[in-house]
Image 1 (tube, rainbow over the protein chains, first blue to last red):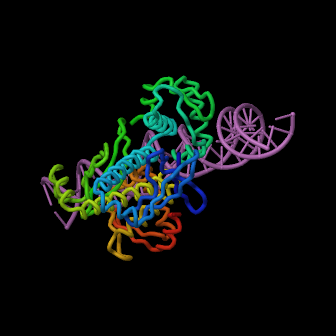
Image 2: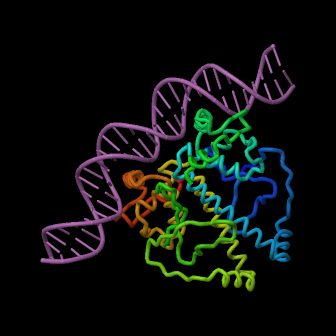
Image 3: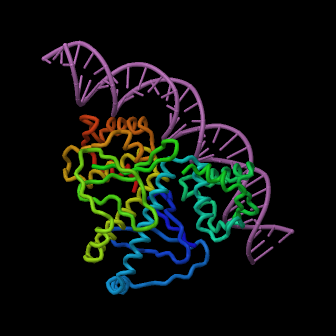
Length: 167
Length: 167
DNA sequence: CGGTCGTTTGAGAGGGTTCAAATAGAGTGG
DNA sequence: CCACTCTATTTGAACCCTCTCAAACGACCG
């Protein structure tokens, strides 16, 4: 898993998203589209020279349609995240994040993997490490989730979690 | 000018962007990509039936490349906004917003138009109307900007404004 | 078993919100 | 042209959620 983030001059960081196997990285068709990537788990990547990739796009129109579809989905996700960052409480942010993660995960009901650290989650949700930790603890106390370890999570009340997410 | 926004069930609102003449609205190539649009100034729009538009994409590959470029730019803007919403202070958010607006405006140094109301600005920056107003007043007091009226703004110290934006 | 890093917990402070009221501005009818 | 009304904006004061600073705890690793 990869974390994509942007930085301010003084070090403040915003994780704009996490990439899973099969995702594309570094696509830039407009003017600019730059962020930094950091591996969260060991990663194998496939690199295309820019010109070669553009050639592939010319050759296979279906590929361009696929890229457009992926970019469009990323945009939709970014706009959902804007709603989260601009208008949701810490509790709602963490719940939304966990619902997203659970949806993308293949394990139904089984323990959910949280490969990223609390700092990555905090910088993704516009919070501090401490608030993320306290909010985890709160949800655990209420029996909504269980945290067997810091990087392993079980959703005990999916309906309740979705309700808290407030989407 | 159009405002695009998303809503939570209880009415909280996030303005994900503003559209100016020439922009596209309603493009959805991925799974979902839905928000609401509201006219801020009188607007003339050109509507394409979905099937017809898809046909145009097939017929003119350059159009599809253009759409991809636009979507890519929108994604980059969304990610900048995520950094703003997640990590910037009220002061920095408003300054960033004004810098963006000034860059997109054709008037150099001349009075900048703010067609949207304080509520739209607040919902775009993840703040309240009151905080937006107070922050405007603060910048005006310091001589960074001038506000001849609520919807007309002059940037007196562009360098200072850009410094405050903290990008 | 000791050391280091990441996470959790605690206490106090602060930036932005909330609630409330004053002011300004735009439109309307006399 | 002015008085009136309605809405948007500004200003004020108290509150609160989250942040900051600090320390304890725990897990992983050598």
